[in-house]
Image (cartoon, rainbow, N blue to C red; front, side):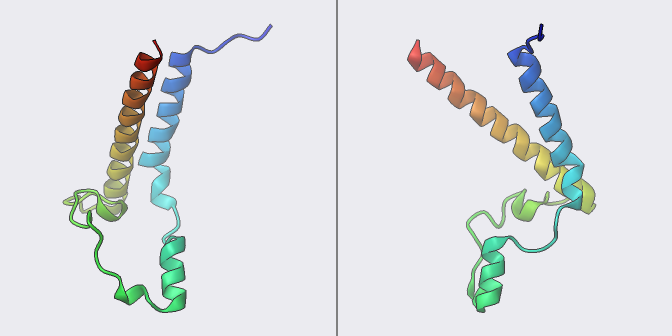
Length: 101
């Protein structure tokens, strides 16, 4: 007979995996531009782009402003991103469940 995994165990395990990937594995991701930047460079209009609205934010360009180490800067930005996304998802799910009741 299969043993059921509790929702809490599943969520905490998933959170641990996400934090591990964001904090450690993200350091070795590709340094090549994303798809949109690649197309802009290929078609020759990448230089005409301006800074985006959040260019001055503390976590712009997948790093953490004020942290000199690339490994720590990217890892911290990833961890904060995971935690903020998780908190937002938790809040949205709570609102949906509350409306259903």
